[in-house]
Length: 265
Image (tube, rainbow, N blue to C red):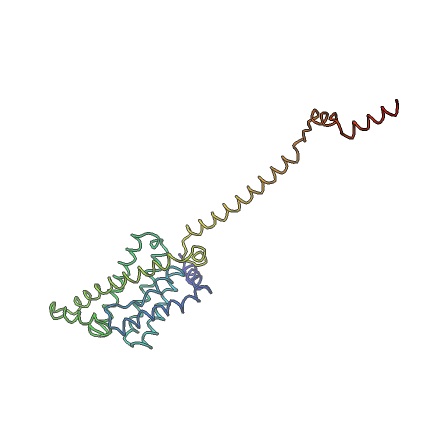
């Protein structure tokens, strides 16, 4: 794949409909991240919107959403979040490309997305925590677990990796589950308007539309054929019945004949 075609694929993801979704996804992330930071939960919950927009618009839109989320969290909640923008960008790209590969359509694929996202975030976030903050940030309750592991293991890197892995398995599991439920609730015809809707779904929609058109055409043809048959069918007249009606007493024909015979007499 050439650089030009790659660039065209990236820019194609940033359609007007995708750009409209970015503030909504960032808002969802901010609500979860601010709530976790305020309550000191051992979770982040700041990637639900990123995962949803990765399913709808693509990996690079999700990466931008993750970047904006961490920038706003650093402004409104805690500046500690700013270096972790790298983790959010990488997770958005990983989830987006895995969704693009069709993994989000199967349960085992959703589980794989969860595990890979947790692994990527664990490695990148742990490196940032160790290199930038010395092993603990104090943003959530995980710092307490990290301190306990440092005392037990006597190794800061292993302690941070262990606590981060445990935290991310829970956090990303909740995130992916909520995003999966949201995406499954979105109507197919709405999903088809976005870049990351699978070609199979779009093909199914096209097949349904073609099937409806074929059924309409068959209905019109059947109606036309039945009308032609009814118009071309000859009208059968019962001559015997007409003769019996004509010979019955009291009819105008009999009266006319009697009147003629009377005049002749």
